[in-house]
Amino acid sequence: MARDVLIIEGYLAALATRLPGPRRARVAVLDELRDGLTEAAARHTDSGSPPRAAAEAAVDEFGTVDQVAAAFAGELVTQQARHVVTVLVVTGPLVGVWWLLLLAPTSPAGIPVLPLICVAVLIGLLVLATTGGLTRWVPSAVPRRALAGAAAVVVGCMVGDLGMLTVLATSSDAGLSVLAITAALASLIRLGCGVHLLRACRHAQQALSGDEPISPRRSAG
Image (cartoon, rainbow, N blue to C red; front, top):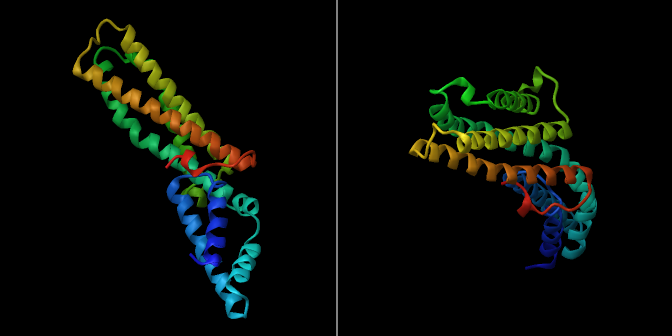
């Protein structure tokens, strides 16, 4: 590989460790920067600079890794918040329907965490509304608040799942039916997903604050 390409790819590799957010969003940013760096290097080469010097000049024009990471942090953190909420909004009904089928026929009191789940859903919808196309009509949320809202939704869903599992474990009526096992497995899977999403939120928060490098392998995909 030519040295000029190595310089650009090395710069992008270092930047990749600083970017938070979903994998697809990070890849799109890196691809955009790669195209820009390649074009800038080509302009310097056309002006008579050697390939290596042209690549170094292009990198200098774009700024340091920390500067570029900070420039994209807000956008990527917002996308991380939307990604987290979307995952939970999509999986929520898939998990909830099993618990409704299992517990609702006995008594509405069999679902003690239902108000908490409703609050989590409302917060999630608010995050989506204030970070997407609806910002033409509603105030947009700053990245930090959007991320905090997403984390709150994750915690609410995890508490809800733990509550449902506790009800199942202490209930004498539910038994070990196929429905009960399915509902429990659904909540256990979402609890594992919730831990992963909370870590992604924490890493995104650290990237937004500039506290430490964020490895893309540790971010939510």
